[in-house]
Length: 294
Image (tube, rainbow, N blue to C red; front, side, top):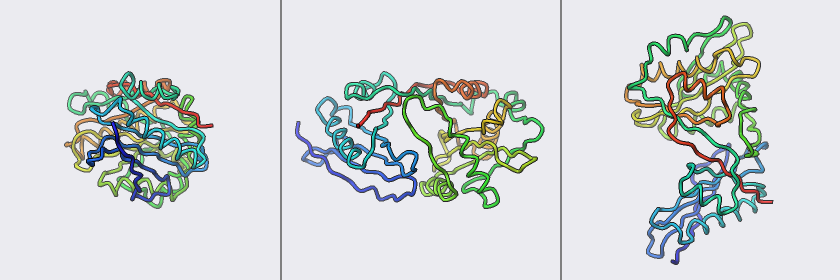
């Protein structure tokens, strides 16, 4: 089979990362597959490229995926990146493709969903939302209020020790501009960002956060973006309380949302336990692969 690759320009400019893209098409113009290479801008991730590659099921095993991968790999090397990360559902065709092309399994993620229509919330949320003395919940919709922006930006370091297996994911460096740009990117897509944080009342510091993104139509499933607690404040029920508040708010304010989605590293036993306690149930597992480039 003959086809051509066309390099595309990503029209979305972002201070967080930039993307390169390729479209594989037949000579009659029919699209066959695509590849996107995300190049993080954070200094702690300047060694990485993140690859998303898709080929139409009817066009697989004809060299399309291999050609797209070769283009992305060459571009990543030219950009000075040392490794590519890519994700595939476990035991699905993408899993086999990446393994066959030299990618190494680096991390397994457990994907789970909370069914908002069937979960027994009154009993679960009543105790889950309780905080120990000395803490209170603070939440907002959309961009972070100015009064909380410095503390919220500092709280993002709670993700620094997030289990990332052998991915070599590096450290994301946060400043206030990056914090605001994430919220703006969500708003530009027409989606809604809801953030729950925990404030330590003695210091006024934010010591944990949980983000949830609702789809543009405010119906269907919403996606958790991240939940983390500063190391000195863990094992006190703070993560569970924040997620419980996200659930309560979603049910009260957006009844069109039918489920909440989350993904967690399989060895992050603490967060997996929080999810199970709140009624999240596993749907599938996905593998994060790593391809060394040097």
